[in-house]
Amino acid sequence: MTEKVWFITGTSRGFGRHWAIAALERGDKVAATARDTDTLDDLVERFGDAVLPLALDVTDRAADFAAVQTAHDHFGRLDVVVNNAGYGQFGFVEELSEAEARDQIETNVFGALWITQAALPFLRAQRSGHIIQVSSIGGITAFQNVGIYHASKWALEGFSQSLAQEVASFGIHVTLVEPGGFATDWAGSSARRATPLPDYAEAHAEADRIRAQRVARPGDPAASSRAILQIVDAPEPPLRVFFGSLPLELAKADYAQRISTWEAWQHVAELAQG
Image (cartoon, rainbow, N blue to C red; front, side, top):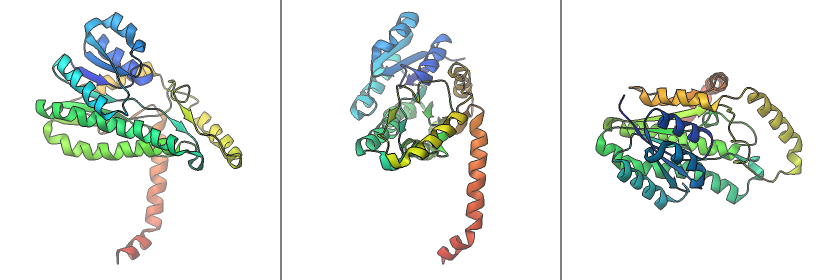
């Protein structure tokens, strides 16, 4: 198998870190970004020149382009670009401040967009490459208390599906990875929470109860490494792939309900056609 060069954002923890280690362990090279590169010291000590640590805040477009350029200059090519950096913003829609809403979109949507734009000229020139967009089951369905997070992942899904069609002729693949609940720190210290409104107290309790049921059997982040390697090594990788056993069940129920509603209201759709 030919050695691959990876560019991964958000490698200080979670999926990004596990996937970086998996790539390095099999002999690939990784440009690993994090806000604080001290979190990558152990990887540098263990893997040496195979890992290039880069300090990066993905909301800084100029820094994104510079980091991708640096990685390409250093390794001579890019094969797998992983937009993993992001976080979850909790809060009912009415509770969100302007700053909280804007920051979520800046990181989860624009951060991925800027890295994608920065990498594409290199991938087009070499007529190959694979862009991995870390979405979520929350990119195709929605739950209470994470509305703006859903908005960010639905946006990522939309532009990535268009992107896949735009770059296919250049030999570039795009895959949206849609995990369910995993034993990462996504809902812990990396999450942000809006100030709750008293009128939503009961609804918050219900949302917490439902979420606890949904993540009662979280996936193993280490096992996800084996899954991501299968995807990047596939000759024809999927546009979308779930990670975890629960998302497919949730998706089937959600889409069945959507189709049922659309069909029930098709007479109104045809009325609107004129």
